Length: 217
Image (cartoon, rainbow, N blue to C red; front, side, top):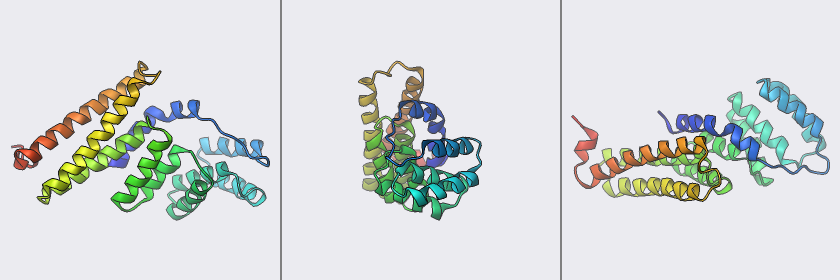
């Protein structure tokens, strides 16, 4: 399973929680009724209609971040990558705190370091965002395996340690979170714990016998 498929899986756990926790501030000229109308079309997957509505609103109020976020999401759903990135870039320049903007920016990026950059930005906004953290350590785990296949043990270990630190950090923060006993969070922690065991196995294969991991039979 690819890193961004992992991300989508965790997003299914988080989506309703994120919306329930999110707070927004509206600009002075923000048209709430038009935005609500665009949101309704977005939920119905009529992304072209969303774009049509918001393009007009942006002409009248070009400085409200929420227009650019939803425009970016709509283009992203239409797989119009260049347009999605353009609107996400603008949203970020206006101070976007929408975690999904940063996750999608990562998925639109073509190289590992850029993907990591956007995912770390996402965790700065929402440290307990499961999708961002899961995608980060999945990318790092894949990078470690790739390095190991190339015989680059030091590089493999660096990626493993970075991936493990992401999981440890998540677990530490989860302990102090009021939602710690929530079944959803417990499910996520269990999944993360299992991934930590995979990383331990990978680390052991690097430090002892790489062939054991690469060729278990």
